[in-house]
Length: 315
Image (cartoon, rainbow, N blue to C red; front, side, top):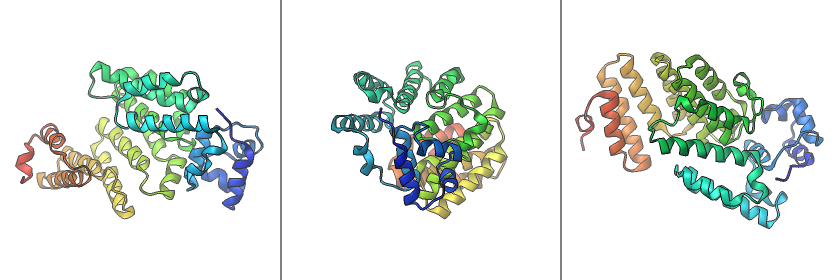
């Protein structure tokens, strides 16, 4: 995999009219790391550079051919298409099989690509077991191995300061939940808290308030408190997230957040009318966004609230 010349990093910084101190803060690295990047003393691969471009609100499509010839570019586009077509549809086994066909090119050896494949392999392993929950504690070591592919000296306490790509965020989120399901609640909450406070995630949100990663990490954060049976805290953070979604007009997964608020209102002993109202709002938002939430919400109504959906919703 080709490496990015430090001159490109420096040119981007100067184009943004930022000092080294301000640019380092923006992309969540130390000043010394940025200095090494700009002077070709610290390697940065194409995927990392693309993440920096996203954080700086740059269209990454214009930069592809700076790094790859036509064959490499075609392979990259094929790879990203497979990520979208298979992983986003949770067809992880098919994705892993497709990736085996790339074993003879440089792309497959890139750490980011290796991590995406590892993520898919773990998800497929869980699927093969027939588990309903993919944060099984028995997979804890596997999630640690997955994050170590790109963060060799991974430290939960340093997560807030890491420059993270989307796959790393997904793996760390899964790790926090695996810790939670293993009963390591304090460690899970610490990791989820540091992820929510991660500088690169916050920067992505500043650039694009509709960025789904920010809301997703907030949901894992809330789930960590729920699993620790700290329901009042989980409710408090769910309410904050709902308020922020409304203020920023970022409604990705707003139905899920409303649903978590409903569940935690019930768990904290609030009146049925209150949590019923939030549940119906969640149902309606899901209906507007996805079209047909009936089966899933029938199950949630039974499991979380002990009622039939038809008793709450006038069909």
